[in-house]
Image 1 (cartoon, rainbow, N blue to C red):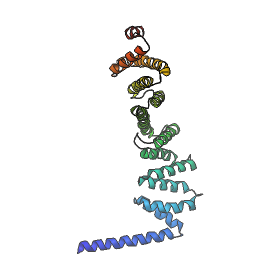
Image 2 (spheres, rainbow, N blue to C red; image 1 turned 120 degrees about the horizontal axis):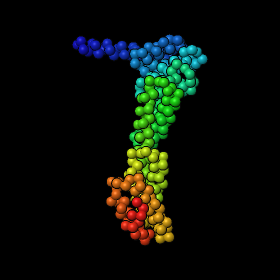
Image 3 (tube, rainbow, N blue to C red; image 1 turned 45 degrees about the vertical axis):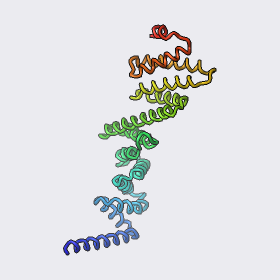
Length: 272
């Protein structure tokens, strides 16, 4: 019986609370709304606080409280993990108050919101690029901030994700046997991310793509494309003379040299 009584009391309090909140939303007392919004924020009732802040902020736009109210509103969405909305509010806050009290933290959190919604490498990386831009701006503008080290670590993670995305895109063309597209994608990726951890594999995939593209070309294009394959072979061997792909690369060379009527043994010696 006591348990049931407690439940009934809790339900009654909840209904009463909801009724009071609905009245508050309809109220024209914006000072009261502002006070209650702060109270809700302080007690972790972020959804209610945000709804009230949305009504209060336009009324206090030209006051000294405007910056703080916008900051608290953005914080509500951030703490509810609604990062897309929070990010837009943080960025808007920095635009409105570039030298305000919350500019430093809002710049950081705006970038962090983009980071939090950036998907895995296989998917579109627009948010990752926005996060990179945001953290870069933060580091450049607030170089003495204690969060610079954290921002740099996020940048490293995001750059690795873009490298992986570039690698996966290029490899996809290779797996689909679209060798011309693979050559272009691999060339661009190697140029853009010259220190990539995938570099050796990508250089091999490019060489193999060039070889297969030459092999499947029409006769009047084959000589030119085999010659390009040979040039790429020497570039690969110069960079990775003891590559884990050495056996595959040697086969590519021997077939290419045979087509071009080059003595593989003598040519190897002459080009070492």
